[in-house]
Image 1 (cartoon, rainbow, N blue to C red):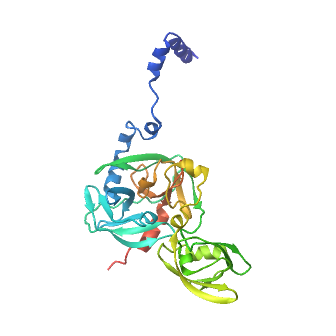
Image 2: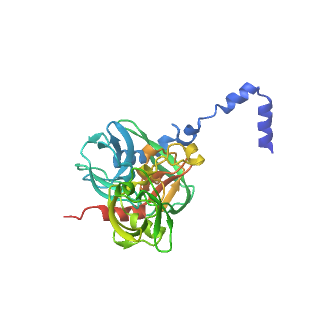
Image 3: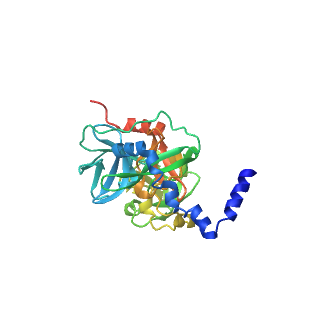
Length: 336
């Protein structure tokens, strides 16, 4: 009690202005989580981000990050952010690569493998496991200047889990379930379904030669497709069977005018694709859609995952390192 009594006596002897001066001004919210005094503690992680992550550009506009996964220029990126980009280029460190090839795509995880002609790059260091307790510090890319990265820090804020969602690409129809088929209810304007001539009342029978019995069976067949793929659709109309080819579209493009929820409207800048992941790590790192895509680091500067989506104002998702490395191995070309 002696200590608290001393504090009370001290406060009683100070004026209001002296008390405010003693307490000091409150820091802005962004400085409390990623302030200048905090950043020097993460200098090793900043070096890893500088050397082993890539900035993706569309013209002069930086739109995402990527992860350097080999010395000779292979880079993991977020696939849905590459759609309709006019001229994608990459900066690693101080070097700007204007020739970028898309080597492989993985729609289930929203991944793309890019390639630039490079040598002696510094690949990311992989952690053995993504298993960190809730509350553990993690580090990622923040804003970037032409040559320098700013770190973005946060914590693991929830247990790893699956994130449900619909397939990332669509035919362009809304339907009801019949006993043995899906019956078209609405055909969305300017989609592959409309261009192929599908109409309300058509009963979808097969997708790429496989029988479609319900909503889940269609989602399973379409989940690994990417925008621009063409699917063979068999449907019944007036007791007659027809076959057409339908070009698939990205869900966010087909339904761009869909009314967003109040939560979305208040969440700020979230990712185009932010659901339907088999497993994610959740953090509270305050990303925006442009700073997603790079590595998520532990305090040893090792990559425990790839930041894959800004979900809302409080949640960011990363693909755990275990699944990320497994999918990367499938995407890399065979060693010659």
